[in-house]
Amino acid sequence: MTICTIDVHSRDVVAKLILQKIESSGAFMWQSQLRHRWDKEVGDCFANICDAEFKFDHEYLGCTPRLVITPLTDRCYITLSQSLHLNMGGAPAGPAGTGKTETTKDLGKAIGIMVYVFNCSEQMDYRSCGNIYKGLAQTGAWGCFDEFNRISVEVLSVVAVQVKSVLDSVKMRKSRFNFMGENIKLVTTVGMFITMNPGYAGRAELPENLKALFR
Image (tube, rainbow, N blue to C red; front, side, top):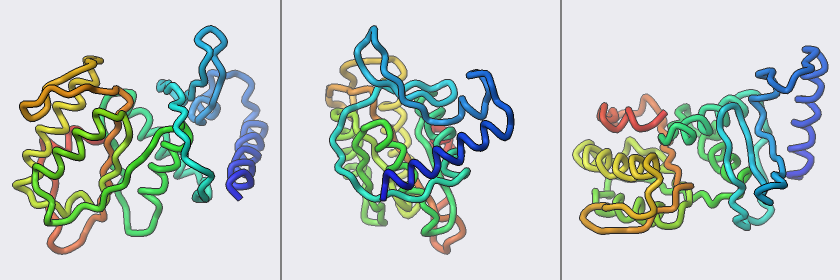
């Protein structure tokens, strides 16, 4: 089923390339696709999309079903991969059940990286969030925080500092960094994504310093 889904999308992309008479590899229509290639010199697989390049992470994720790929999926891929390229987090927003989390998981699957999904609630304090970030930073996995704006505003302002310290260390390509007074190792493939359902009563607006870290 997964192979059919991907193949149908590939067929559509090729048809579109032919229709638009695209002949150069520099064309945006081609650049904006997530493409895998084998680098003979390095002896490893890389995934390219626009300006971003990711080394395939070779994490075994099983063969799980995936969403149908639409033009919107492609646009989300571009935004999320560019935000990782700029050492930021991504923030897909939209109504419930539109596939924000699934799209993030599919992108992770495409580059062989583990994606952990956390359902956020009012009970989360800065310590529990900090422990999750600590784990993600040390394993290099991605975290997708569902309904992030359920967490109370007081906690979010501390979380902003935690996220910033991780992302700044990734930007500096450090192998170890100081997180909440503890010196921990860092795997730079770490990624953070938050999904939010806008317009619910009782949901906090994200603090500006946190908003700036997520694209």
